[in-house]
Image (cartoon, rainbow, N blue to C red; front, side):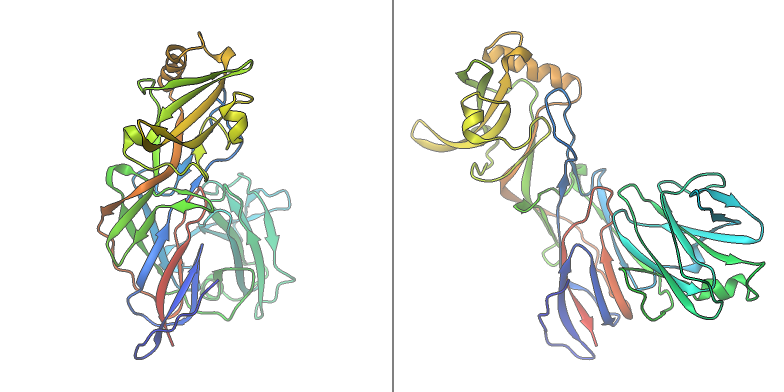
Length: 388
């Protein structure tokens, strides 16, 4: 989870950490330096022109949050409580003698909750209410009001809240405050020594023109660089409207193939040897696409008027077109754009710097956790944090 690169420093030293979520032990309160975050774009399923699958990226909607928190994520000053518990049918049952707390959580994340006494935990995709159902429930071993026990849960992709049954007035003599003071919620699958919650700070990043931070897994991604105060835009996005200049290159028995001179129009670079994302097609087999054997999309290097360029080749079923011609293909693009699902490509671009104001982040005493919560998945990060 971490890479150690020890730097000079007094009252501690800076060490380098990286991962999809950063967790550093024995930290002190000090500026976090050399931090970076990398974009990610996600597409779930196999797309087709009949059923395009949107591509979602980090920061959709115009911004993203970076959370810096201590080990214990349970802040009793900001907690919601219900007189309820979670039954064996995963239903939230209202009972005056019981107490259930709920707090926001991240999807696809492992949490361990620990405290003395009664403890069970579930997850919910919405604010829990009496009579509603949770997705799962994990119960700690036999309760003892004076010995800490733990329950570990891994949230699903739709999780938004952790719901924990923490107190039974009929069985536990110590008051609710006693139990809340001893509740710890931490990331990971292990129960560790209790530490009081030091709260969390949310650092908000506004994105120009609501442009998200993109990435094509395992290949190329946009990069947020705090030290330089910039975003490196390495992943481009183009949506076709039907006005593009295209050229038909193949009229095979099944498909027609059309070529679009990408770099000539956009001034960007398309690496034809590597990956891309498309809302209409999965990554195609080059020869099959360029020869019209199957539907798909690929990029390839071409030469026009003695100049090396890059082109996008789209192979599409002829049965989808009103006529097999550039006019017919452009009309199909126009109709799909009007329906709200234009042919969209995410690709490697030549790179563009965007200056941006990035707030300075500070670590906390004890343990520092850094994360970028997002419904689509996690962003890879790196940072130097001062530790004892």
